[in-house]
Length: 333
Ligand code: NDP
Image (cartoon, rainbow, N blue to C red; front, side, top):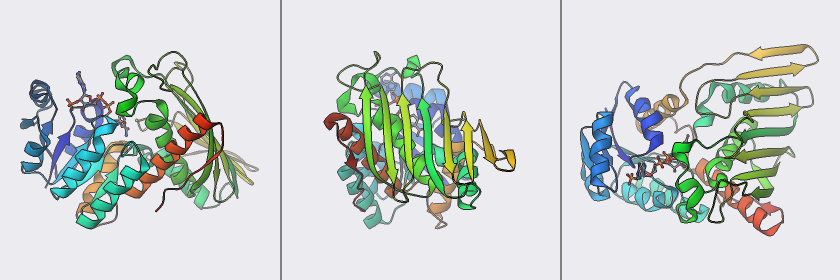
């Protein structure tokens, strides 16, 4: 079995990841670490986790095989490096760190230690996104020309904390959502971005100089151009993802989300077709791939390198917004 230690008593673990681990035939949540011992105990009790600890050493000293890191973003680097050093496999939340330089350090350390390292980009596990990727790879829209990502949401009240108040914790919508859009665009297009131009805003929710809205324009290696919109303040926008090609368009609705919902329409000269796809929970699929990788079969659905790509993209977007210039995206891999 794979015994997991949770680093961080987080909302995402409680809402999705504990269940995803337990959905594996060989997955066990063995321990949770919170910086506060009372919170660790309460969280463990609430979620039926046998051990609660309040230091990283105690967690890494426990009988565990892998850690899932879902603390605030400034902590991922140090916790990730310590877990790697302790020989644990690491599934780390996005962004992997606050800078792509730091993310590269983690990924290099993981490689040297020969442990499995993954980035928890859930969207590439969605049936909708996999159906789009397959349709494009099969030539069903001809040559891809342009993509549009609609990923501006309303940050729920229970999450209106560090994301909108703490720059030092890696708050802001770009490190929160643009990283996902970077990964999803790369995955669906099967292409890598080369440059980005971005505008950001503070539309009334985020403070401390943080942005709560962003619009980005991307250029990909193949020549595809894309636009993406990320936000925390739009209650009624809905989400979507479109890829337009020489012979057809893919129009996906309600797919930039944590749930296996939404629809994908293929429109070509021969009419419109609703693509069918599996509705498996995104995080459960991600965990299954990760467990397989531990057994030596394949890779996590999003690797450390994928996490470096998404963070390098977000970094470039922030720099572009700050300087008013187009910035090249270089993951230095
Ligand atoms: P939370 O705010 O829920 O948790 C982050 C940290 O905040 C926890 O580790 C915890 O610290 C502390 N905390 C949580 N609740 C409380 C509380 N009631 N009082 C005091 N402190 C508290 O963050 P999220 O779960 O939203 O995000 C965590 C990470 O996961 C981030 O890196 C984020 O980017 C990522 N994420 C990824 C998603 C995905 O789909 N891939 C979706 C959502 C988030 P401690 O552990 O020390 O107790």
